[in-house]
Length: 60
Image 1 (tube, helix red, strand yellow):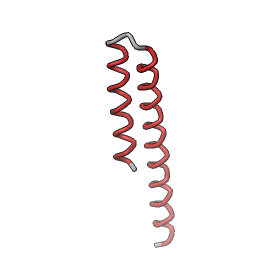
Image 2: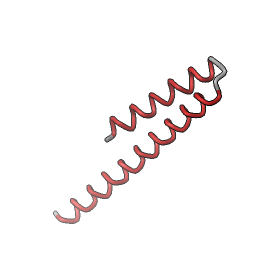
Image 3: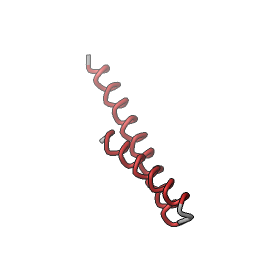
């Protein structure tokens, strides 16, 4: 899942850059949304991993 969120962030960055370069606000905004979504997914995945590590440590 981490690779997926990184890909989404990269895709968003490309869309945002192209939208900015071509003065296409819709594409630029779509890129910003993709980047934000990717960052949110990455944050949730990291939190989930940390929670699982904590639970595993409690079991030991």
